[in-house]
Image (cartoon, rainbow, N blue to C red):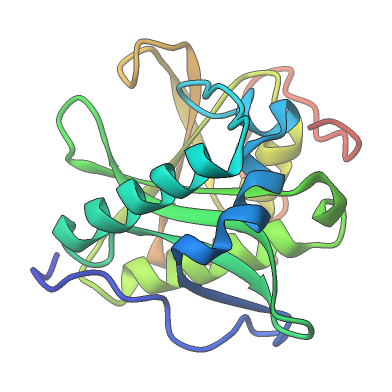
Amino acid sequence: MTTTAPRAPAGTSQSGRLTLRSWRVDDAQAAADIYGNPDVTGWLSPAMDPVRDLATMRVLLQQWIAEDARLAAPAGRWAIERSADRHVIGGAMLLPLPPGDEDLEVGWQLTPAACGHGYADEAMFMLASWAFQHDVDEVFAVVRPENTRTTATVRKNGMHWVGETSKYLGLDLQVFRLRQADLDRSAPTAHRPPEQSDQAGAR
């Protein structure tokens, strides 16, 4: 990885529908609509208590912005902005996974109203493409076994299931890996966990 501070992935998604940009403190209301919702925070690893008020959200955004300034690119956190109306509909991140920080996790969170429109697919594709521009060989997604919506998204973008582990964060998680050669949305039959459903209606 390079040693420069993270920037937002350049440009918009291939469809032009999304832009990833750095978080700002004045995004607090939009961010609270995302991270104040237990249906969003309950799927995070580790689970996060819903943000209850704007003051707390502002403090959390300030913390994320400060942490980003210390991270080496391509790592960072970004707001997912809908290009048509500049409305923030989610958050995205590329962060080192504990305990060793040697693996880079790709992740995103959308407000429930934005789910079901293909935004997660586009955000993940943008994040992975950004990572591979910075001498990163592979990125990982760690997913709770019950989170079949996210499982379907990562597989649609070419990620391959590599197993289950409690290595990260002390939780039992499904691990998916993406290498640059796998960044191909035309590979829906990528290897999946045993008995793992791709039900579109699951979270």
